[in-house]
Structure formats: C-alpha cells, structure tokens
Figure 1 (cartoon, rainbow, N blue to C red):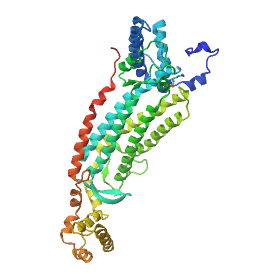
Figure 2: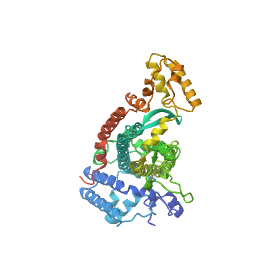
Figure 3: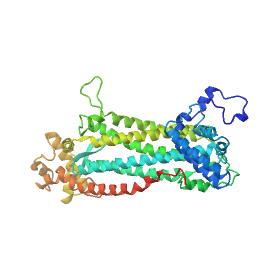
Figure 4: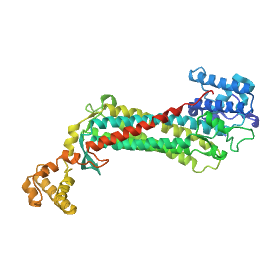
Length: 473
Ligand code: ARG
C-alpha cells in the first residue's frame, strides 16, 4: 500500500482495517471522469491566474486528459487500497509528472473537490434520467393515441365508478411524469452550482478566479459562501426526492399493471419477454418486472431517508459522515434508470384486451350517474334524480339485470320523465363521448391531452445538450 498523502503529521501508518473502513474508492471510483474534469478546469485556472506557471498548467491538463483515457481503456486500473478517487488520481499524476503533479492541489481541498465531483457526476445522470422520462411520456402518448376510444371502467376505492377510456388513464400518468420531468430541471438549477474554490472551508489566500472555473465547467454560478460550498448536500436530497416521486409514480403504475394482468381483470397481457414463469406452477405468467419496480421504490425512498438522516445533525462544514452520501444517491440514480429502461419496453410490447375492458365497464352500474343526469336534463333536481336512480340500481340487482336492459315500464314506474331515449343516454359510448369537458375521458379530450403533452415534451429537447463540457479550451 502506498504511503498516505498526509503521512507527515503521523508517526504510524493507518491500520489496514481502518484503511478499508475509511476508503471510498470502491464506490466513488465511478466519478473518475468528473474528478479529472474538475481538475482540468482547476489547473487551467491556476495557470491563467499565475498561481502556477503556464507550462505546469499545460502539462497537468495534458496528463489529466491522458489519464482519463488510460482509465477508460483499462490501461490504468483503480487501486482499491487508495483512500478515494481524488487521492488516487493525484497520486498517479504525481508518479507521472513528479514535482508538477504535486502542484495541482494548490488552492483546493478534497472537501470542495468532492462536492464538485458529485455535482458534475449527478448532472450527467440527471440528463440521462430526464431523457428516459421523456421517452416514457412519448410512449404513453403513442399508446394513448391508439386507445383514445377504448372504453374501460374508471375506479374510485378500486370500485367501478364511471366509464373512461384507456387513453385517458394513460394520459393521467403522462401528466405525472411531465411533472417529474419539470422537477428534474428544477433540481439541476441548484445542483449545477460550482463549490470549487471553497477550499477546506475558508476559501484561500491565492488570487483564484472561481468564476473562470464555473464557466469552464458550464456551471450556472459560483457558490456564494465557502462554508456552504463544502457543507451542502441539499442537491443530493432534492434529487433523491425527485427520483423517489418518479419511483412512486412507477410503483402505482406497476400496481395497476399487476392488477390488469390478473385473471380477475385480464385487461392486458405482458409480452413473454417481459414476464416470467413459476418453477412449480406451469400455468403461471408473472408480472415480475412491475413487482420489482414496486419493490425498488421502497429502497429509493430509503436512499432519500438515508440522506436526510445523514445530514440532520451535522455541524458546518465538512464531516466524514458525508462520504455516505454517494452510495445512497448513486443507488437511487442507478435504480431509477434501471426501472425506467425496463418499464418502457414492457409497456411498448404489452397486449391490450379492449373487449375485456369494455365488458368490465358494462358491469357495475357504471352509468348510474349518467342515468341521474338524464333526469336532471329533463328538469329534475340532482338529489331527487340521484335517489330515483339508486332505486333503479337496487331494482336491477333484484331482477339480476342492468340499466341498459331494464324494461321501460320499470323506469316509468319510478319517474314519468323517463322515455325510450334513456337507453341511448346511458349507453357506454354516449357516457364516454359526452364526457367532453377539458381534461375528460372522451376521445376528443384525450386527443387534446396528447397534443398538449407531445408539444410540452418537445420543449425539453434543448436541455439535454448541456451535458457536455470541455476538456480543453
Ligand atoms: N472521500 C471523501 C468523501 O467522499 C472525500 C472528502 C474527504 N475529505 C476529508 N477531509 N477527509 O467525502
């Protein structure tokens, strides 16, 4: 094992178990590119400000770029006994450049370095999550378009309530995911700030130009206070929260998919490539993906809680507890990407059983509100119409029939306002087609929702290009 960077102050090497306990390279190693990017910007700034010589600055930038490629191509392997990715990169650089390598850490601390690295790393991740959410929304629009006319029962309390269309149901999810997409943009506003130059906590005496680093890294602004710069992990919590909400939405959707796949519903069937069998029951086809997504929602909520709990008692500024931020936020990021990228093709390939949806909508007196509305349109007060319709439903149950097949005499026995046009008024098609209010389930309304949603998704395109920053000027 290499000698510690901070060996001067100590009379012994650290115990090997302590080193393993302390080390974060096994999980922060994934930030190597972003660490190098930050270092390139820092070295560039040091040279421009005359804090190190131009030649040294250029040599550092060149070697950092080379090292990045070497790690990428497997020429350099991360040393798992290193304390963290920051120490590892600096030590390789120093092996290669000697004296010059040792100049990189001028006017910088690992405290501001790690804060920057996580931000740069997560910025790229957020862009990936955002484009997956966009893909999901587009998929929902495409399926909804095909099913703007597909009648299904809408539920409250999981009891059949009023008829809607499958397109309408899907577009509800599309709105949820649009909000998620907006939330990610909002997270980026604060995540994309530059803490570098905060030093260990109290800035630096060198004549640095923090704003230059901010520009080089395409950050939106330089963090205002150096203590805050190294202490803040709000951006991790905000992102974990935004991801938790995405997962919660995916989880509710999964729950419905699981229900819809059951023989009790049979509204949909998942493609064989997106379902699994049982080791003992030959007839089974299980919606494992949807169940796993529902399950993974729990761990992501856990990640969110880990971050909040980790921060709640910490005095300013950096504390080692904060090293625990990475596993939690990386787990949330990894899992939401995994879930989204599996969920989308599962939706794209599922079979939709329109007839079963329609048959389910035809049962359960789902048109009772429309029957009452029929009387209201003929002049009766809604509360009276409601009562009469309730009586008609009870009569149907007694006669083992439904409102569509109840004889006109029975209707008339409860109110003279009923006429044979009642059958037209309470037909499922009428019930759905006339629910034309803005946001409603009628095919017209659903088409308008799809159009709005597609337009909104297209406005996002521009944001995703930001993921690139320079490695040289
Ligand atoms: N590995 C550390 C972390 O992830 C880097 C910062 C260490 N700073 C320190 N003063 N020990 O938080």
